[in-house]
Length: 297
Image (cartoon, rainbow, N blue to C red; front, side, top):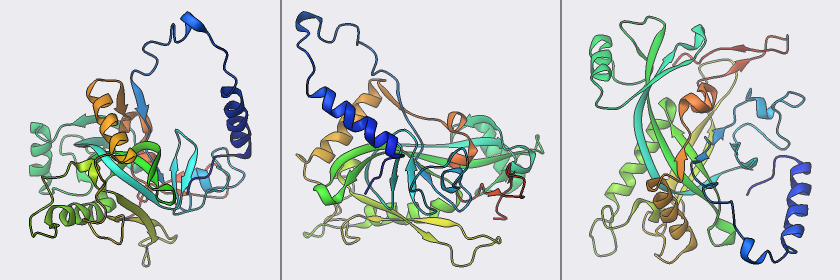
């Protein structure tokens, strides 16, 4: 279930709702001048909150009321979730070249999967996964990334769509993501035929959860994700009917993306902390400012 960012946000929302019930009849002026305002709506990255995420540090500038480690936070709506129940409408796989975290962690460039530089970096490093060192820039590293456009829904309200955003898969998130995709591709219907290829990707309801890493490789614990079909872990049971509002909402989002009215935020816009949740910890040194570090994996 979602909770709003602050009590103030709730109050503002209630006032707005009450006002909307009494909108005057503007006649022929209705809608005039609003053309184009919905173009290029940017979907923000949904964050998995860690023990030192600014949103959970009470008293800090980034604190969000009610936020706890292991929760998911959508900065666009201010909503918090214990678990995400979603369906997908878009996927974008690429590589990000970053300055190493201990050198500042800044964004350098995005590279497509088939970019010759990607192949050259992997060949020189003799490495294809993780943080791949860049041969001609010793302070840089290459990281594979997948952006997933998602519609968030409420399973307690018949899977009603309630929010949207981008869920980013990098590094520690790849094993559960690949396991999910493998289960979707292998699933068979009651007649024994494969479901994959017969259903669109937005027909699958998916649950994204978090669990505390039992053997963290640094002093403080961190949370990793789980990804499963949303209903009893069963792919077939998790399929949506074609007339369901969630199915239609995701299909509409894809259409809006294709028309250029909606786009997914980029790693350059969101910053590395929003992209690499568990791998980008803020270690409090007692000064209140914090020092940025990285997990050794």
